[in-house]
Image (cartoon, protein in one colour):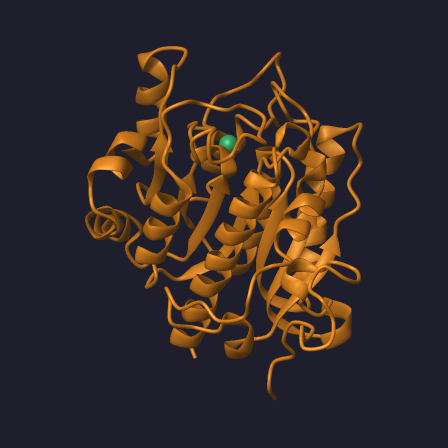
Length: 316
Ligand SMILES: [Mn+2]
């Protein structure tokens, strides 16, 4: 059966009507999808500026201009596989522990109708329950993590589930394959050298923001590919990987980051990776200007969908 694509813009302006991601059909309209887009509006794990609970709404708004063919990947992702918008999870904004459980449960339920999920955050706390659900389905994962920050810290104020700690928890829970994961875009001040030492013990390799600026995307992609090897890949993208000039609307901005062009180029160079799940998190629209961040996030999400559609085609 041919995939149901985005609503036509032939007779309806793209800024009209109710805004699903990229004007795609809702998941309940198509029943089953290869890729479902799911919002996780939650930001109680934020350590600095709040507001990422409004991220899914902002990213969907920023996605209305996306067109169906991606020449850079040479794929029309929405005509290659069925992609649909599954709406938002209902998440308790007052209890982080309950939110983590319900996000995992929501992801498991969504897997009943979709092979792969792309989740729009929300703060980075949401990645842990999403990785739990993905690893239940696909086994141990290699994590490819775009972020200014490591997010492998232990606790804040004694809290184990925060937006700075998801990947330490994922490591402790055995969800990640040994020495197969990568951070990309890391920069800025740390608490100490021990942050890096502990991160390395947890099996991460680091591609710094300077390396993204100075090395070719092909060179870096080869490093990432040799790291993730044959493992199924979970791609987690914190929008603060971008320089604050390219993504001001986020919770913990760090100067000296890559442009959206550099990040999109590196993403596209990962085209052969078997990406089974992904998230785009930390868009906090009250700090945004002229939808800069929301539009960047929507294009990163669109490119991620293209990568997942390529992975789906390759696995058929
Ligand atoms: Mn993060």
